[in-house]
Length: 219
Length: 210
View 1 (tube, one colour):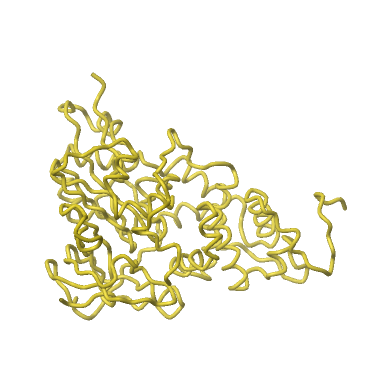
View 2 (view 1 turned 135 degrees about the vertical axis):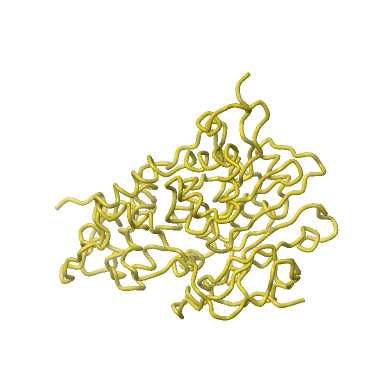
């Protein structure tokens, strides 16, 4: 979707302000927000692409005014209601429905280390041979899906060169909509800054992105 | 039962109970999820402990120090960074598929995620606020030298800047240039010179104190 989350190349957000000696968390609630989000993912009701898309679906005004963990918490609440883990009434009141039977959490403390260590690899076997090889020139398609995509606007219609083959990976455009993992070949594609931003850009600069085969045409 | 200053209408609209302050909102959500048996509070503590005390940029610094010290290890990082990093015990969530990119006098690499805030947690821990900021996400790809200037960094004009936009589950770790004056230092001493920002590409490794 052409949302405010697709920020690459936008102007007007001001300078980057690194914080000296930044703490890992700014306040106790950020710790809880992180932990709740990771613990609730263990229910398996959504995948990483569904959860990224949930953050993108936040109202644009909220997306821009929320901090990182506020986005997480808002998207978590949305996903829990959408998947029936909690009801809208429970989300609003903060009180459990007395009729609902108590649940058993899938992620207990003893399973945390192994779960985080395992992570969620996205590599998958793909039977078809890769269409592109390192060194091939490709063009990013001009796609504007209303759903989830990992093809940023600033690359669409632009030409680049394949610099790495990453093998087969889950395709987010499908997986985010619960339409299956639909794995396909993933490539690192390098675009010159001049191609992306025009003749004023520094001719020595480039941006490299990981793009799935369905995003690419041969040139 | 007294409530926290809110009026509770038992069969009416409860939206007035949703706190606007994020700390209160998270507290309310946690209470609800624990009460419903959806989360184990001890699991929450274990997750927080992992990212507060176990997983952080010292992991990545050890990878870099070994890469500087051991050419065979650097070769393994180039061939299969995920496996080479796992040799040091670092793997898992947000580090499932690792690739290294090496800074040299001719090429400077810098990593961003313009679409969200993808970051190599297994080697760098949780991302700093600036990495997740709209300013960094928007500008890193169009004005990398301007962003580097925000960090007080200036590169020679002839240096090629390669920005990596983490659009998939591949996580990029920058191997910064080894600073001068570090010949003979052991891995531990080298790791102490490797800053978090130098492994994102918005900093250089520190030079040893004279």
